[in-house]
Length: 369
Image (cartoon, rainbow, N blue to C red; front, side, top):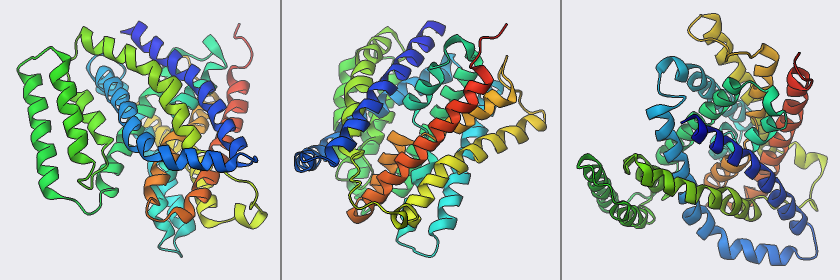
């Protein structure tokens, strides 16, 4: 299982480079004479990417979550406690900071969940810059924290981004989920029945009022944990890393700088998301983790010092993919705020990445004797 974990970490780190390239391309296109073509691409593909292809992303997240729970970094409570509590702090503090900044305007409060997420690909990409000088236990901590972070995002999507719920369709989705569980309980090993039911589950959730990406997580948690699952993950993960996530960035990260001014940078949404990611994340992850370690309920990851741990807390503020996704869901019925959401996510992620890299360089930049 260690080889599987290492392979996952390497693929996610490499995909961060592709994701960064796609982000830069999206911003260049949005500020070029071809901006109209980029807008046409976004208008034509946004539903397919955000409501369709992102299901596959969440499916991979669910598979990794299940593997880590069954045989990996989350198998033992003692291993899971520190990243779980760190992730909790890294969600609570950014959300509260955003609410404090946008409180005077109730319309803006809808975006409270935007700065609570960590982009695992970008974060691991930053950590990979330091190679083997970063202790493996610290990489596992970051991966586990990002997984708990994704669990939190999934719960938020389910509870807070459901609207005009159709109870009949929701009942159909629950019935399909029950059938998936039955297949698992009766140890059905063939993948085809699971995949067919997964497609039906997505079809039921799409018009139900519950976001259909949840179908990917449910399917991942119910398919059998066997060699076919590993093969399926191996086959799909590169497509997610090198195609789906870059397409998501192309469709969601384009920010036009034509209207930018100092006043715009101080817009409550921009400021709330930027500070939520850059300050809220590091305060929440570091503060909650420090308290847990101080109470002797957990320990620092092996061969890790506090400076290196703080560097990881900083790069947890690279929210990007999930922050853009949550921000888009927050204002899906009010598109006038999407530009501010994108700007805030990019600024907060950029600051977290730069300062996190500098701190990590201080901790691990030189080869240890």
